[in-house]
Image 1 (cartoon, rainbow, N blue to C red):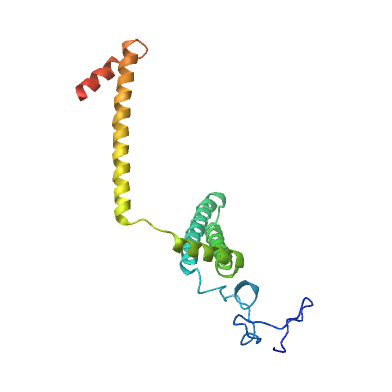
Image 2: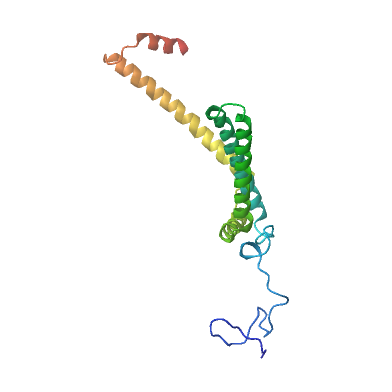
Length: 182
């Protein structure tokens, strides 16, 4: 047995590593991501790469849209020589502020990062349909769509002729136009 023990909650049992040996892990324990380190350390940087990137792209598009929206609306609110400075300043502040928030969420926040990592892991498990199956399904949907449109058109014409015949619908010109169409 090793003389290294786990301390903290009154536990004096010897330390057992993953390999079952009684030795502590190599090197000093350094927190990664949100719990410590510098601002630019990314929590579990080798995991969830594409999910984080595309989430960041979508987030960036929304932030830029918000900045543009505020830029346009501040033109209506403010007036005078400083209007352009206010517009640009607010848009820049929104992009910087929400950009830092997005970085913190997508790179430093443990719960959000773990969720995105788990999402990417689940997406890798999905059994995606083949191109042939998608094309076949699309053909079936298009056929049913066209058939239903034709059936509903015929039923609509039938009801229009029926209600016109019993005097509820007054539309002789419409029926003549439909007769000329066929």
